[in-house]
Length: 159
Image (cartoon, rainbow, N blue to C red):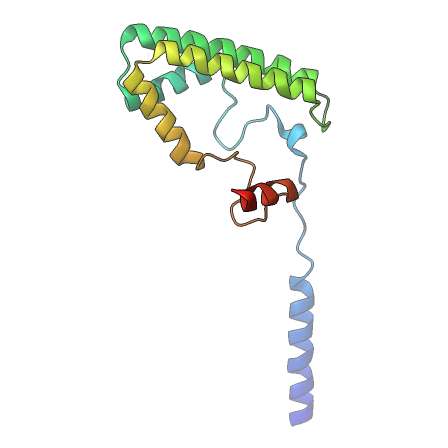
């Protein structure tokens, strides 16, 4: 009788764990397939809305004047409207060529120069300090704690 009860209990436990393993997987879409879809209760914002939101954030943070807000909003709006064109030049999943990388760096430098002309020296210094502390001066894609590339290691040893 004890053996029969033990066998039934063992059978129920095995059956229970086997059913737990067959949970259906969610249909996952690739990031590019999800682009433009509603995410939760949020919707994709237009370039004008994103520019207004970013201007509002910097206005609160750096106490911008009305003239600075208007110039900054125009800068962000132009930047947001140019972004799809630059993304369209690069194919899906392709590597960035050296020429494209230089063009992006030139646009970034131009953006920084325009931002510098809009903000006061104190505001721009605070902006730069915030950028340095936010990313610790590193590119967002790099993860802390992972080894550097071989070329970077040898440069660190020399200095």
